[in-house]
Length: 109
Image 1 (cartoon, rainbow, N blue to C red):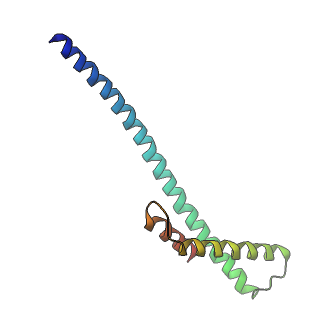
Image 2 (cartoon, rainbow, N blue to C red):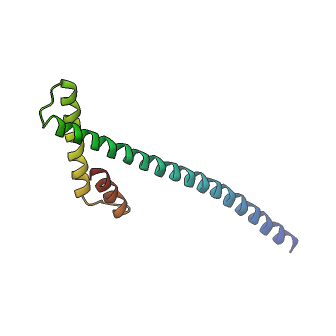
Image 3 (cartoon, rainbow, N blue to C red):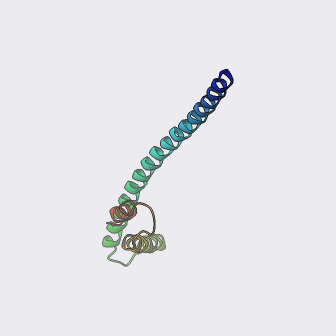
């Protein structure tokens, strides 16, 4: 009986140690997820502002930029905008379907 009790206590201690390790890993992953979400929202804001500024540039030069630098900016903007719209129109293959499309649509405006 004493041996059986000792074996059960050992199993309990092993299980508790494994649980604490998993809990610590889960806490680390939760912190990483929060940071990734914060960065995602920050980048979505930056992209939205960049899109607004590029749209203003496009309207200001009526589609005919006067400098090669402006032309490069508008070319990159047009390609990026097209990719965002294509991504927003493509249904996700796995994962959370609303997270992928709603983010792309928010950024693509």
